[in-house]
Length: 202
Image (cartoon, rainbow, N blue to C red; front, side):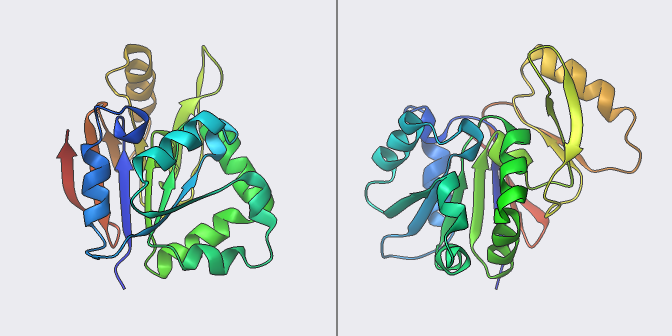
């Protein structure tokens, strides 16, 4: 069973005129029937408006979403393993990872990934899959913290943002023998079995 991650820097359903990457995502499973796809909006603290946009964009699929409260569901592993795609939204990466680790949802995602469930995500939902994250601590500072480690190295989305680019480049200069990726808002990476197989520019 192939293991797949699609790291999205920008666009997608949150920007209605930038939906190509979502179309690309839906083609990965190579299934004719509606796909089982669940949205995880932890990084935005389950923002309802964000969730509504997801349902509008994926109305032709078997769409669902999982909130923070759902992570304690006794059969949550079975629920996630039954999906074709998990789509993780953007927001506060550190907050999201703290919640996942506190509830054990990080383990659920790791297990599902090994079972062949496709993991996709934008911004926070893109960088979280890597060994190391480097992102905002607050409005003025960036800091390093541990990611899920499904992919080696680190990813910087929104690299066209000047402050982020300067901070990441400075941090990157201290990282020896690390695989580092930078993505502009219209760039995305497709990994298969932990190997980069495509860079998609939208």
